[in-house]
Image 1 (cartoon, rainbow, N blue to C red):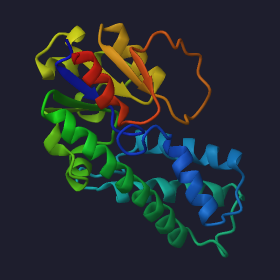
Image 2: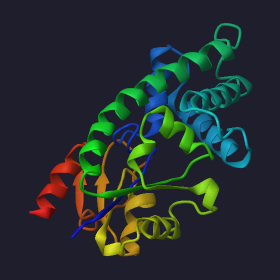
Image 3: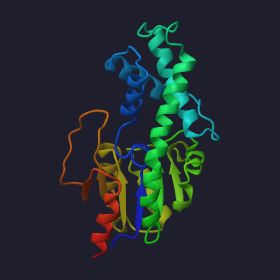
Amino acid sequence: MIQGIIFDYGGTLDTNGLHWAEVLWAQYEACRLPVSKADFREAYVYGERTMGKQPLVKPTDDFRQVLLIKSRLQLQYLIEKGCLDSEHFPLGTYAEKIADGGYLVARKTVDNARKVLEKLKTTYKMVLVSNFYGNIHTILEDFGLLCYFEQVVESSVVGIRKPDPAIFTLGVEALHLSPEQVVVVGDSYGKDILPAHSIGCHTVWLRGIGWAEEQVDETLPSAIISDLQQVVEILRAEKG
């Protein structure tokens, strides 16, 4: 019998399965930036790696500020590579536009996710396990989500990153349950589903539009969904 739930954050609660690269690319298109998707992908990877190596995000930064940092890094990369003309597309102006657009997407999606968490909170203990920059508490507070979780396990705080199964073990321990009593809900097959399955948890894969094609075994997840709201239905059926 499932008694606890571990949720992923990015790509799960804030985009309902859509990879953040796709969310930001949609903002590039909305701004009519003359950049190819291939060049954007290079810039996206550069930005993610830079943020992973340098302490650019402060613990008090909300999600809009995170998106602003990402956007600035990406646009600077594209300008330096010669893919974008800073005279016609000034970095500051367009970084703000991209961050604002992405933030609105996240807020709208989180509003729907909150309804799911509200329903589940009455029956299950819940923990969040996320790869993030040290400011996930600020983001959860800003979006009104922190109150739903018994504990938050953040990679930059505990020193373990997905797909290391050990970070999910910490989540299970935070719930004070055994792995077979816990279901993990996440959008990444490789970073959420595989490692959680390896320690004995049930898994619900929120399959959406990812970053790249993965070799997956669709028989491995306990369930595959296309919308976060389906978690409620699945757990209701599990309880019988």
